[in-house]
View 1 (cartoon, rainbow, N blue to C red):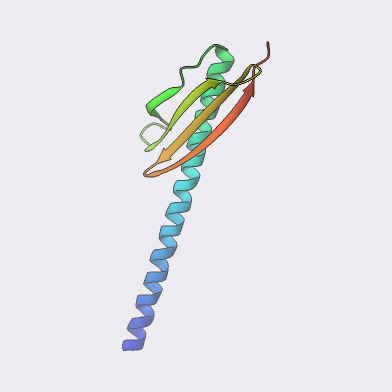
View 2: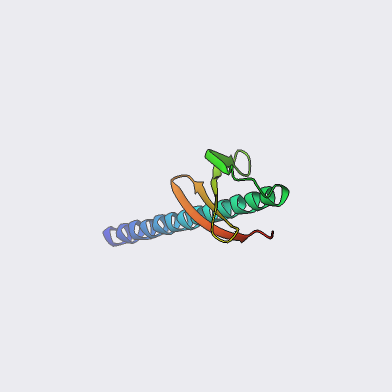
Length: 106
């Protein structure tokens, strides 16, 4: 009985660890996709108005709505007419940051 109980406890512990790994992987992917959504949103704003540099400051944009995923975007002038877009996507306590350098034609 002790051996069977030990095996059951080990199996449950292993499953709990696997579930935590899966949850973390999903949160990482959601944060990365959220950061990418922020980059795409900023690029759309820049296409509409080349002088746009407002970004999307904290608390950011929740996307999709009511999902718990959000992004904060900063936009700054770089060198040689480039624009640097930095987006940080957050899901729960996990954040991922992406940076894009955009060449703005004259």
